[in-house]
Image: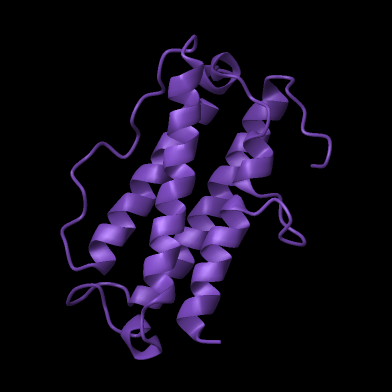
Length: 159
């Protein structure tokens, strides 16, 4: 398998695959939350889970644009959560985050390995470094979601 495939597999699997072998994925961390729970903020200066999910999606979209040679998206990196009473909006936000992750992973899997060593733009990180950074970013925010759940008393038993 190619390095691009391995990166794509890690990006998608660690975020969206509930059975990835060792890491609590974002899908597991979010499972069972209602819109009201996802919109709750545990304390001042903290994020809601919904806001984190929106942020992760925006970052996936921005990295995909960058890998395609397009400018970084101008959208706010932290879109606000939706209405806590709007279950369809919460489900749509979650599904958009997973879909953006899958789209990005599919694009990465199609890259030639030599393209991974090329910088996104002159003076910027190489593509593989950017992708590794995004994988770490997703892990950070998955842990943030787990921490928010625990602070709200919405325990995730396996963590």
